[in-house]
Image 1 (cartoon, rainbow, N blue to C red):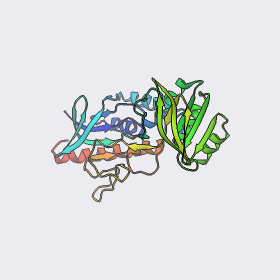
Image 2 (cartoon, rainbow, N blue to C red):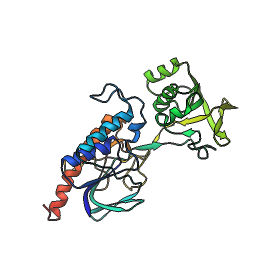
Image 3 (tube, rainbow, N blue to C red):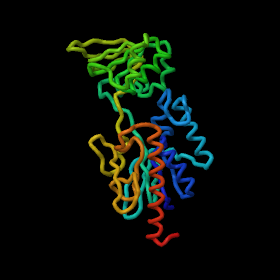
Image 4 (cartoon, rainbow, N blue to C red):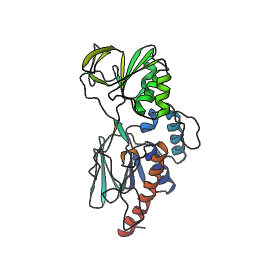
Length: 311
């Protein structure tokens, strides 16, 4: 079977694209190993239009409920490769190969790693990349958060509700992120901010029990039972060969022949959301980009069918 469209990713961009694809009544699949993407990591979402205060988990459920109205189900498979041969796009997962006329890449981003000894060894044994997912496991314990940007600030604030103590470690000389978040962190008596700190190693027995860091040339050890790594994100686009910028984000172009948007360097392959070079990384932006990509794909499919003698 050749689908009209395959959507890769089920974050706000992918799910919105799926809703619009369903409304256009085209034959499509949405494939993603997880559902919600980065949206599900957010403890609080205060700026999504129509919802003054909602958790990321709750907002994901609202998206899913909307998809259920159209009978949309996410095929939960891991993407291995997306490529185009001739006029057909091929999407390979660990379970099979699917063919389509168009593809929308909405795979979002994944956490960066520190790359220090002990990080891989203690994954899920004290090393975590999602505070909203795992914070309840550290109730009454002492934890560290690596990273002083928005992600790190939000993680520290959320963990403070559960942990006995939170150390926020930032390699730069001051916290980054938005001012209102850094103000909250500084005012939280349960959070201790440490700047100019470079983490060297994560240590433990069966589970994490400390981390080694360097500050002003002096090496010290901090006793913690958990380390939450929040040092940034990288685009999940290594499975497709399209033009990308130096950060690995898929570059978007405008067509000189058609009014389509969200097009990549490969005809028939569209992209939306945080996986792209769109500068504003926000849930509402990703959703809007998913809508645009679906409408652009629909126009492309109509031209594809016409070119191949199909009505």
